[in-house]
Length: 187
Image 1: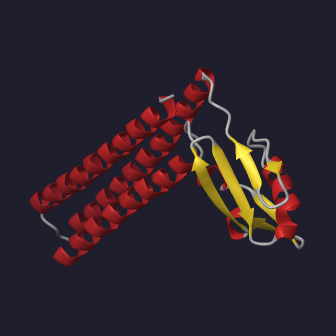
Image 2 (image 1 turned 90 degrees about the vertical axis):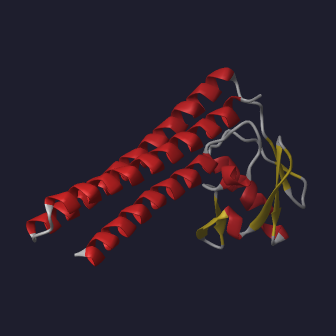
């Protein structure tokens, strides 16, 4: 029974950490006040008839907080990359100079910043839901062990341990959200 409890602990911790990792990855896509290669994550480019992620076809750099530079691996792709960025409907106006694509990131309005904070809060809430679901699954597994003969005291201790994990990971979500809010609202 002890091995089963250890497995429940580890699998719930792993599920909660996965929720944090997904949240952090999604938060990268939420535009803050400065340029980031993650802003072009959703861009697909027509590469010989197939829709290919931009990052597979070019280097994406940020020489300064307001500019993205896309340098294609093949010079012939530059116009397709420009079209792909336009099709992605990100609100960017790419400039093609024949060698690379330059994107100037316009400053965010106060209203747009508030919308981005709402988007970040929605991502954080999804992470918390995933963490709570991991807690529920772990508690259900513990109840199953109780039905198989595990003592009530050990079940209570195990449920308290799972709750401790849940609280810790929920605090991590709150911390990541607070950092992102500051990042978005900072001019």
